[in-house]
Length: 414
Ligand SMILES: [Zn+2]
Image (cartoon, rainbow, N blue to C red):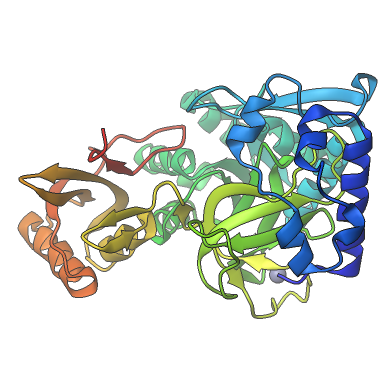
């Protein structure tokens, strides 16, 4: 993606500022970099080093603070499912900027002051709940701050308060939708839109949530290291691309192996640079999220650049018999076989000297399970010249989760 003169100026200013701050994390990174040498995209890519989650972890607890202590008003922490957590300090301006972006996300999704927004992501150290909340208040809509879990109460409030927007992870939105259906309360539900964040989800899952609840769904993007959710969303005109707010963030898409930009329109790893963040600015942060730039201009007319839906994680990408397999690869195959649900698991093992993949899928009652298994094997053989084992179970038998679910499990290196 092109770097504008304004963005280059912002990056130079940020580097000068963090170098002058005396913060060891940043001064070490930029000790050999003269900000004035960053004149264009090429020199930016050459001079500004990548930053990884591990670098941020090493700065635990408050090593990322690039402003004096009295300017820090809040911290958030990333989930820390692997290793030590990352602590991100925020200034008041960072909090305000995040709320502005988040309110903009709601607007792009066609949500306004008269909406009632039921927020189910978690509050606390996580950026999720409080981000949805701050954006909602900035917008002027009514927040229904539920937090996660307690499905009974969620459904009751949804009906009694007439929530028009549900904010959730895709797994939890599906769980709620299935509960609404099972209880026959669709007619009591006033939901019009869902704002779905934080994990990769497939077309089938989207269709299932949409068909039960009859709502429009929006993909919100973001991560704790970079404000939180709310740095981009798809708009009402197109669900093919997520607008990223380039007045706050510069986005690159890189080959995960080489770190070089992929040709525009190809899938790669999203890499983010914050342009005005004060508390813990990011420079070329490797997100491990996979997406591609959408190059066509959006019908909505907004000029914010667009990326596709998140295709998965670069760490989820597995190589089996010479094929690169993403969660989306498996979803595409399952999608083409009638009677399957959107849920699946894949396990890759090393057996008898060979790599073997097992795919578990759910099917509706009355569907011939052998036929489904053969169908999936057929499509895999056609597309990837390999035949997975297939285990077919009934709808609801694979675990649902209120948290992120890891669908591909590689047992070969354990
Ligand atoms: Zn648009």
